[in-house]
Image (cartoon, rainbow, N blue to C red; front, side, top):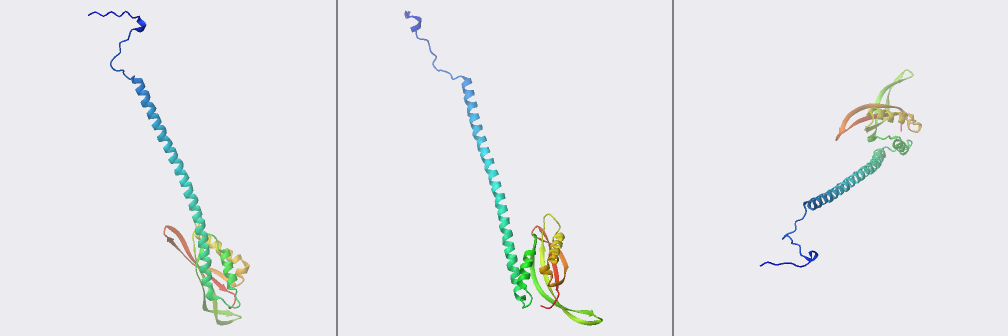
Length: 205
C-alpha cells in the first residue's frame, strides 16, 4: 500500500537512528580532564608532605639544640656537686677550701671537667743553706678530662693550666702547678684526653 505524506516539509518527522553515538572527542577530553585533576591532587599531596617534612626537620634541629644546652647545664651542675663532695673532707682552718673550690669552678673552660680531687703528701730530700733535711710536701692532685671538636685536647689543657697560673687568688696558695700525665681514650665514639695536674702548696695547711 502506498502512503503519501502531504504535510509540509517543516512538519515531516526526520528518521532517527536507533542509538545515538557519543563522540570520541568528548570521551578523550573527559579522560584528559580526569587525569589532570588526579595529577593536581597528587602534586598537592606531595607538596604538603614536603612542607611538613621540612617543618619536622626544623623542629628536630631546634629540639636537639635545646637538649644540648640543657645537657651542658646539667653537666656543670654535676661537676660542681662532685667538686664540693671531693673538697669536703679537706676543709682546714687556715686554708679557704670553699674559696678555692669556687675559683676552680670559675676557671673551668668549655670542654674540661673534673674526675677527682685529692690532697696528698710526700717526703723529699731538700737542701737549704747547705743543710740537707727531709721535708714533707703537700700537694693537690687534680684529675680531669678534656674533649674538643674543633681543636686539639692538649691545647685546651694548656689553656686551662694558664688560667690557673694567671689567677692571683688561686695561685697564691701554690708554689707550682705541673702537668703530670695525659692519656688519650674514647668515650663511645668520642675521643677524649685524661690529664693529671699536681699543684704544690706553698705552706702547710
